[in-house]
Length: 149
Image (cartoon, rainbow, N blue to C red; front, side):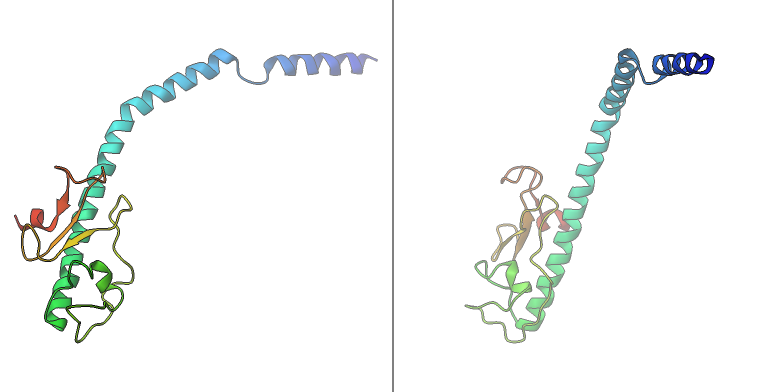
């Protein structure tokens, strides 16, 4: 009988001591929110810079593939043939004489949109570009004309 009283008293004490109070949980949530508010914008800014840097690198690589395509086939693909001409043999004019696969898949920008291609370009012989983070034609477009500086 003495043991059962001790056991039930131990259970009562254990129940009183286990877990967190609502106040403790709220303090932790507030601290995490303050940290996220301070660090979040910096982290997101770096992610955006990294995405833009990746887009510039992708565009440079695509232009290199297109230059190789032109060297082997005597002309760039038409706008209608597009960048898909790097992945599968295009039909229509100009017909590539020595086509081979230049890329495994059609290039996508960091925002999961296909890169744009114009031949002739508005900024040079060809234009390869992305509409950037907003996905619409605007001031933040990233193109091979930016890389010539």
